[in-house]
Length: 411
Picture 1: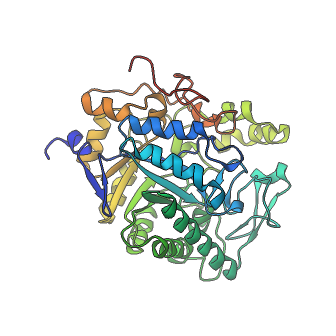
Picture 2: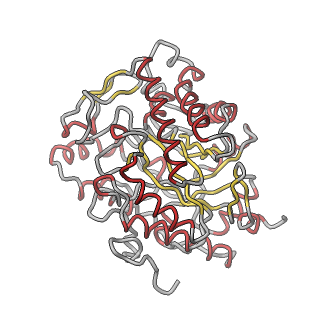
């Protein structure tokens, strides 16, 4: 197919799963699961995106266990949410879209007030800055026995997700969460077989991948989101990314999502555009946390001007290293960018903020080669995850705000 843009809107396959095009809604926690239950607003958001023509939408954050949540208003995979979850999935599938679930774990980074353990655990001892106001200032070290138990937790969650009707699972290997904490030398200071070399630091993630694959079977699509760079000194670098991808391919992943940044240390590497700081300060209830955020604001929320396809060059290095599917994410708000990424050989593209502004993004992009999405990358949507009702576009306030239809005016 000569036209790269049209290639994006042709049917695609992902380990036997047929997708109506190559556009996937990125896993972006929407703050619409109060008490850890999927809500009507969450259903409507994903349904509306499905109606807009997306090939597959990704439900986030699907914690592997209750203690794997950053806070108590995130879902964890258990029988108590099955009826609501199954209904959400069936409703979205009725639009013609497929549904993936992002399977993750917070590891040593949590403020979950329903946490049942003595302290959160990660690869190495650490300060749990997020948990300072929740009575969990410190994180401990997982023993090898506890690592094996956590691997089994991922497998049980994956089996539940498949049984609930998900079409695919996206395992979260990035952004400073549990598996990423092992991969990054910044957070992994172990001296046993899970620390040291990149091969050793990847061991936990590869064990999770193997266990999940066993739980769901060979013909079930598994995607993996990686951080190509942590964006902090001593962390994962863009030079590591192709080797991380190669190890995941050897472990049986079907597609790799080329992301970047760390939620706890450098989130702006992923977001680009306007800083998250001011919006987060407005919605942070703890005076202590607001003080800390102001103190560390410039260091944590660095300035990265927005530009289209800002991860293109490092993602091409991953694309050149592996033969499995590769999904691009990062700064795609025009039909021209979609065409560029297809011409560069990427198999899929994930969209985030642009879909909040215009849930009909896919329909508009296929119909108009000159389409430019109206998202200004103000990033105010992302700062609403802990606000009442969760995220929506502040420029198009009717899109996905609580109780809204999500149908934008005049588009």
